[in-house]
Amino acid sequence: TQHFTKEQQTTVDFIKSCPSSYTAVDLAGNLLLREYPEWKEVYETVDTINYTYSYAFRSLQEKMNEARSLWIQDIEAPDFTTTDINGKTVKLSDFKGNYLLLDFWASWCGPCRHEMPNVKAAYEKYASKGFEVISISTDRKLKPWRAAVEELGMNWVQLLDVDASDIYGIYAIPRTFLVDPTGIVIDKNLRGEKLEEALSKLFE
Image (cartoon, rainbow, N blue to C red; front, side, top):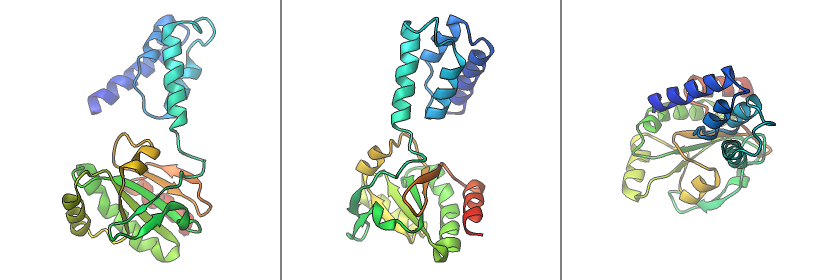
């Protein structure tokens, strides 16, 4: 993963250094970036006039538009209804009025398990101030999911819901969305110190 990320960044750096060349557009059309802001930056860098009708430019534009359609931030968090680990009906919009961390993870995901103590510490520190957490697992089997929840001491709302993962365009985990009391996604991918920094600004 690190090698792939470095390779993509090297390509982006070259595009920025030769933005008016067709090579830049050609390379941009073959990029495999993830987030909309990354695509937007590349799109605004290359020559969007001379190469408008090229296959490479159309490929870049299509990928950027697709990423934009999946970009969930500064908009209302997509609602969903499902049941939690205890069989209770859970509706996302019912959590309005509190700050909410949507945490996508899985029992088999090493980075997810490594991050969970930070999520737990944040929940225990800010729950009394109006902070909630919903962890949504992408596990396919109940037994390892339930075992991990117990082992990691995840004493907040636990969901096993692939549909919710699809709604939020989850392609890699761990992945988080911070939702404000009105239901708007105000930040994403907060982990470790970044999560604590964001919450401390909100509550302290």
